Image 1 (cartoon, rainbow, N blue to C red):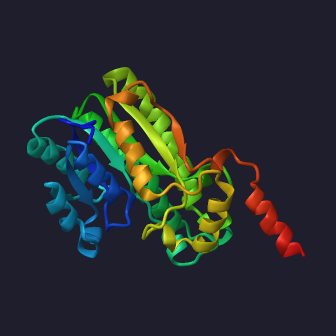
Image 2 (tube, rainbow, N blue to C red):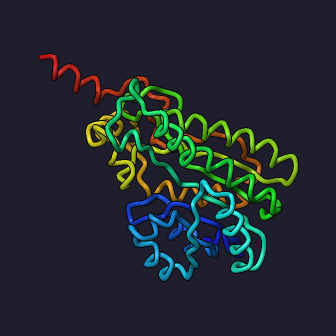
Length: 272
């Protein structure tokens, strides 16, 4: 144990069950000496096992709908009272698409659902940071992270409107990163993670086939939730105090591999 986060106070959004990246991040942050508040939407609190995580990490759970400014103000206000000071790190691990859940094709999207996708998966990131800024809730040098995916840059047809949401998420991170950096020394980054076997990830059509493809494409293989949590810890620590406004690929090399030997062999074998 290196105690990289000793004395740091945080808020972690999105821990649902032990498969969640946010769940792993909470465990790793606890191991590294941080204290934090866990939060999720009220419906997720009922469906998940977050209270088990809270007990294991000595954390408090505060329900908050990330699309509600009122809920977010309450969250940041209560968190500072519980933790005894301003917030040093925030993880945004929130994403949901009604169109994906209902099997709507991207070219035949339902726009009410599309708006909900953007509202929940991207605009919520803006709301979180706007609320933190309004309340002056972040400590100087704080680190804010959101989890993204390479579909923000490349087309993965079955990722649907979540690809648009991730593009917006990353843009919000860059823009707020500039304003936060100028006004309070706060850094904002997004982490573009490998396809990961989470409850949300496996809801995407064809996930298993794509997971195997990405694993064959990546020189190091797919990055799992544990390694992503380790990366988040480093990004929350003072070791990365000058990194901001970046979209950081954490994908075993997938993002910069044109084609791998394994994929070429797979295609050749299927053509025979």
